Length: 365
Image (tube, rainbow, N blue to C red; front, side):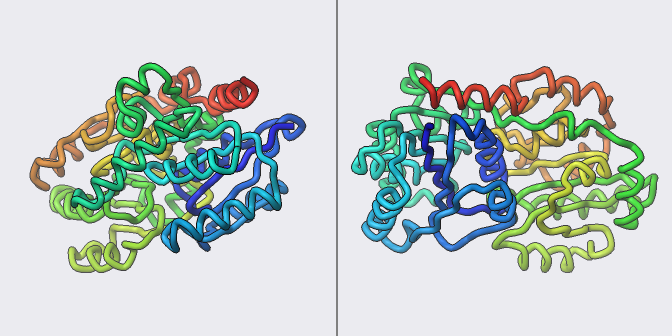
């Protein structure tokens, strides 16, 4: 039996958390995974894991003090271990986790990077912290995983990633996302959206780097071009109140739906016509893979790596363009063959079963 300690910052509905849980769905006769959450944040995935009999352990967050975090982690390892593998999901905090794993004599220490940027400000202290955490990762991790090349090069450096990096694609269950027109109609009725309305959507945490405010400004211009349009925002986060205020300020209360965290993402994707991703930076977002599997034409910020274009139909746009220019670009887009797009995802490396096989092979190596 291989014992794995999977470290997360939360169990909220986010792409990183979702892919971590999907990759943990392995043969329980071979692998047992415990989830360690650094902090009090639980989120909707807690119930999902408890129903499947995973152990969930909460300890102090690194924000409460690095020494306190280490002592809590050591207590966890003594009480619930020994562990064969420490698996740290995130970006810079992976450095802290793999270093502490080394001190606690956990043999395999995996750093899995899910983003091509830390999202921290670029002040002197932040730059020093970033440099030091990357140094810890390169020195104390035994495996260097990433969701894609851009994320891997960012965290590990080009030389180390090319030599030792391992890509674990953010796989999805493509069969569960294959377009179903009858469910599209039902969801549109539930959301009070007409059959001819052009629907844009975005699934993401409500945080600064996801760029919801810019999307709302662009959508305001879209409404000036086409009144029969709507925008679905799915997710939650620290900027929810700010986003609600912006919707009101722009007079979009009748056309923007804030739907919160949902566990029925396929139905909501089928209700859309276009998926928009205006992020300032990303790795390989799970939501974008799911959107392509659902057969949506995707309109994506050029700050996102081109490796996300699996179906070959993504429209990339430059955030430096004006809101008016981007609104016109969005309005010119046309739908794609939804069934063919799903087939492309199914046949690509972004199939969750292929990703799980890579993980179990790494555990057994």
